[in-house]
Image 1: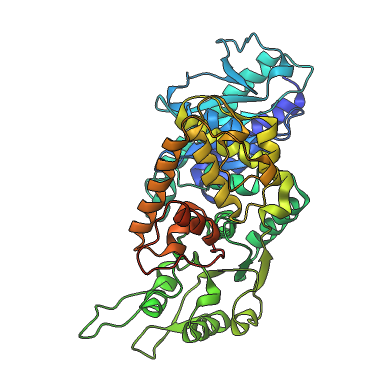
Image 2: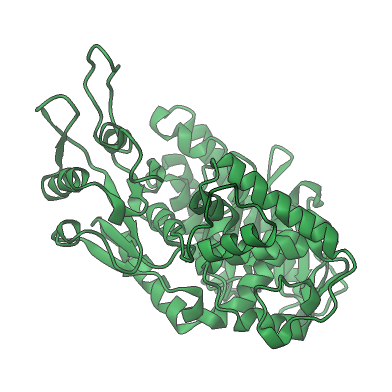
Length: 495
């Protein structure tokens, strides 16, 4: 072992002491380990993926920009994965290393190395690296070292869990490794390398370092809510609650936000500002807030104080507020709050270079559900790249799920793409053989969503990841308009 490797291993062992003290939480332990490994001569891309309390894969730390589609596929299969390091390859099955790390794979084929993190005989996550000791070192040595690092991570987690068992304040953080940022969401701002996305990543990192209220401006479906969650998780508030106001015009919103005192008709109790104390609250469609709610929120932002409904007693809370609005922004009173940071989230049209990577990710999720590989023909990919995606990423996720469900083979062609997405000249003259069945499925999806939302088209569209224009098209297409009811005019909804 050379001096560099010895120094890195020594630092990794020091992380076990940090795990016992747990001064910075579990994330600090994982970050410490990954920072040490990053000093080796080989790695450019590193990641530690663990399961959250619901068993979903969550990224706890990373370096560089690992291929999340490849990592997700490996992480989702961890329950059946053997307890040993393996080589991940693009477009091919992973190859398990022998007990001594030997593997019949050339280094040029190795997209990532994966080593399982094991606690008490159960795989709880994986350590990923593109390389460790450099291109001139045999791949077997990299695989043995990957297994060693994964073992250290597992031991650090065990030590941390033992320490946390006596600390009630931190038990929630361990309660099977509380999610940092789920891969299901992080891909929105990780998949791709467009200039707009690079700027947004930098702004997100800066926003996580400050504690100011945030105004997230952008089109519906562009990921503003996901970005708020991401900033919260990356900030020191990440272990505290993240709560949501989804409907800014819901009855009783003032009591829900600020709390209420008990009287003959209500029980009273704290509101979201108090429940999320130390954490964050996201308010969707903040431009629709009633003036009295806006005034009370402005008072809280200026002074840190508020009053519950039915009392004049001032209370304090340390809750960060996120406001989600369309491009026109919030009310002038809210926009004028001193210290309010504005972050513009680009539409998918403004980051077209990211479309192939996002499509690959969403189709990768569809592969897991369908149990087979899926890909796009060149013509289908070009058609989807040319589409304007008015519903942005949320619409793409829905479209990809439909394509994965409807595809009859491994290659999705132009005939499989919904006709409203295609330009006039791209629409096939002959529909697929199962077009009638697909129409019935789509019709039933629209009817079910409308029924669940009392035939409020905007809410049904939001659930389906469609714009009002798109759901209106389907209502007319399938003759779903009820007697005496007009289809809502063209428009868009906000996520």
